[in-house]
Length: 154
Image (cartoon, rainbow, N blue to C red; front, side, top):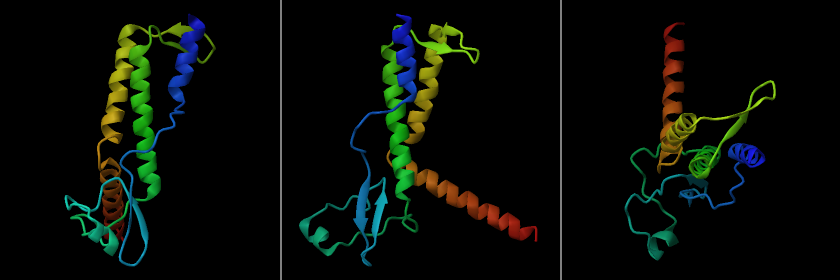
């Protein structure tokens, strides 16, 4: 049973789930530039053949920036990893770990429940639609504020 628990623990760190990444949208602007985002850019407008034929997308309220594909992909991977880990932890009859000195130990039920709670926090941060966009916007805003502070100290 311990060998199975170790295999389970090793599997928790590896996300080899080969799934399609949900919520990744590709669109082309009027200049022909390809963009990727984690939110559709039509904002409630029904996609029709006419709209697709014109390759126009109405601007979103905060479309002053494009989220890099790497951010969208990172959030999708983190979401998949969190969901996979929650499923694995909830299905496990026992979860084992290794101390830095190589000693094998079993996590208590309370520790496993805490792992699930911590992983749900990651899920709530990475899985909602628009999560990558919101995080990227926050990073841009923080960078702008840092630049303004640096200019103020000069």
